[in-house]
Amino acid sequence: MKVFCLLVVIACVYAQQHTPCVSPQQWQATLRRYDQTRQTSTSGAYYYDAVNNRIAEQEYFDNKGTQTRLWIIDLWYGNPPQRYVVNQSTTPTVCTKSPLTGPFFTIASGETYDDDTFFGCGGFPDGGFEAFNSYNNTVNGSLHTTFSSRGCVPIQAFRVVNTTVPNDVTSYYWSNVVLGIVNPNVFVPPPECR
Image (cartoon, rainbow, N blue to C red):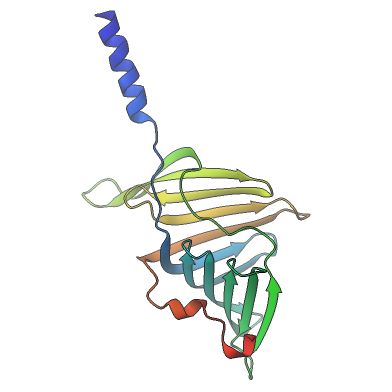
C-alpha cells in the first residue's frame, strides 16, 4: 500500500510539471512596444518568420506632434545580416541600411518554465484563457515571454540586453495574432534600399 501511495504522489507531481509547447514559426500581429530605456512607445504591425530568419515591422509613433511611419525589415539570412529602416513619413521616402549585430530574435517556448497566468475573468464560461510564462537567459541578457496555453501563441515579451549601460529594456505586446504570413512582400526591401 505504501508503494502504491508513493507511486500516486510521484504521478501527481510529474503530471503538474510543465512541458514546453511548440510555438508557431510564422505569424503576424498587432504590436505595441515600450522601450523603457528611451521611454518611447510605438505601435503597428509585426511579422515574424522563424523559418527564414526574418522580422518586419510597420511602426507608427508620435514624435513631439509629428506622426512618423517606419517600415523596418530585419533579414538575418544574408551575408552580412541586414536591417533596412524605411522612413515613410518623408518625401521622398528615405531608406537606411545597417548590419545586424545580434542573433535572430527567437520567440519560442522551450525556455525555462516560470509560472501560469490567467487572463480575463474565470467567473463565467470562456471568460478568459490560461497562459504560461517562461524565460531564457542568453549571453547578452534575458527574454521573459508569455504564451497562450492553447496554441502556444506569444502574447507578450520582456527583453533585457545587458551589453549597454544602462541595460536596454523593451516590452512587447502582441494582439490579433494570425498564423502564417499573409503578404510575404513585407520582407522585400523597397527599391530605394538597393
